[in-house]
Length: 306
Image (cartoon, rainbow, N blue to C red; front, side, top):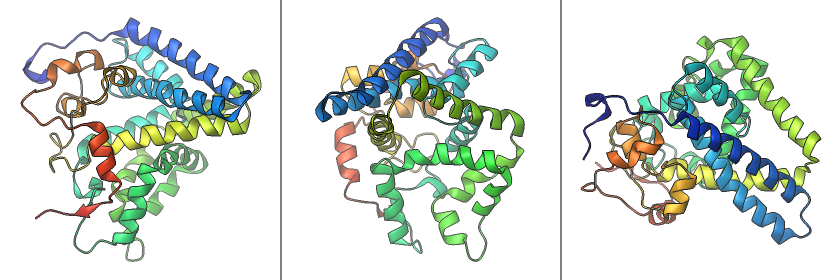
């Protein structure tokens, strides 16, 4: 296996390829939104929504590259595309980077063990959160967090635990995720939120989108995106770096997700661009099927192993 990124020279960032993929995927996503909005039948709209759920995941994967600073070798270009790509989620690029890099620090810690019910935890609250992930409700959190920040960054202090709010704040991980939000550059972050709102509004106006078509596409994307966000961690080792899977999946799907399923390789080497990740997948490690892990998740969270 290739040595860890920290022990090897920096790998080239496929900046031009990423730019081409961003424009092509963005055009495809907008086209599918329009087709879904003006479909002649329900099944045609559903097909468009299903296709959108994958294309928008390509855009999210590119956003993920920008968050780690490996979308483009030039920082200004990297961040500019990050802000544009965040519009398709929609979310703020700065907030997305803050929450995602925080995830890398908290991975498989008590704040992010959504798959296990620990002693003293509320099992019902754990299951509500768990099935919220599986059904796509989890996707609502980034857009709603962006709107909350737009209204008042100080409102995130409500997620800090006290005697009354300790249960839901700590058990859901909301407290750990919110720490430090107030320190972000407020004007720039709010500007990104407004950019997202303006971008979505422009798509409605210029493409003649209908709310039904838009909602159908984003509902399909929410389920597709949300399910993968935890299938690549569910039941994995309780270790910050090694607590993820390199999931087996159809090569076409892996390509559309830009190797996102090689998630342990990513957590072990977060600065490696997506195109190089296969080199960091250790064939000696377990590589469970995405479908098998995903189906096992529907049985619900499990008691924390001793």
